[in-house]
Image (cartoon, rainbow, N blue to C red; front, side):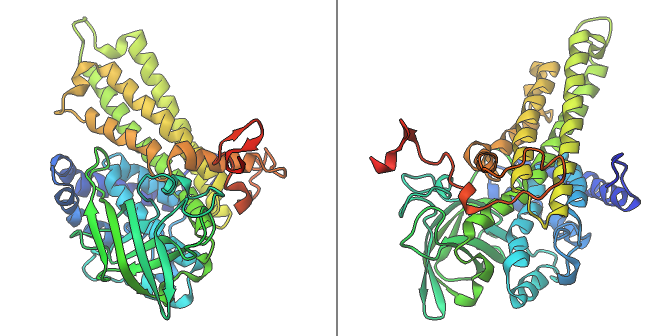
Length: 446
């Protein structure tokens, strides 16, 4: 990327191709699908668009070319993602999760796993192949995903266990909120990457690994969740009841380091979530600008000629521009540093999603009460924008904790991102602020 932010001819081609897909293939199905009360049916209504996205190389564009993927850089990926998210971020999330599920196979899998899984993903003649990523679990005390990086012992943290039994692992427990995992029919994606506790005697960050659970595995059931936003991507509960998978389905390089997989995954997806917020805010801003150019609110002139309207929309436009370029910077950094961006990815995700949620609401305030009428799109923009800060590694806890852990490290260079230096992320950085302390004494030592 040039310092002047000029897109190359190839980047522009990718951007315009994604815009054509979003506006001419995806947009015609979004409104009816979003209004469908049954969440599984709503998701299924996007299937023809997904098949077309697969055909155009969008569905697995983030995977390396050597395994059949599109070989997109992260900068190219978010150029495309903004265009799709301006139409529907839920659909874009479905594509994003393909990456969350399969990029760890590329990072840490064996050559056999890479060829088998990524090869299958990119060579499906039906164009329906889909992957799920399952880290999230139900809230609980003392368990739950929010506690995955605490130093406390068992049973705190991720609770799905995978006990070794000969040449198999036996899985038990529940996941809650993972995306894509139920597949098109609610009976399972083609493959799910599941973060499990391979050492059931340990808690927190210890003993976590990633395994592949294939469609049709006995003892696995899925129940879809009905959410208020991102309705065109499927979130589910998974129940594992003595589900047996081959021991070879363990992603070898993640053994005992599933915690670092979670952090690396959500670092990669940070600028994707950030640019998704840009896309939704852009759509809200353009709709509000069109409204204010048209309606007078009883005055002799369109609303755009009044000071407050112009100032508010000008501020929104500035925020969109600033967040877009922050996303470009974060994606470029991840490209430059072997898909590691644990610090900048978290900073980018928290800043952009929260800044632009406020911006969407400001657009609604400019339009006024008519923005609450469901015949307009503003209610959808608000629902979608409200999801960004709380999904994909919530901003409270998972994202800010990662930033805090890096900043508190004695060797942290505060100019590292400015100078494009690699910022390492280690287990020692994970557990900061996960346990309350009173008068300098941990509650666990009381």
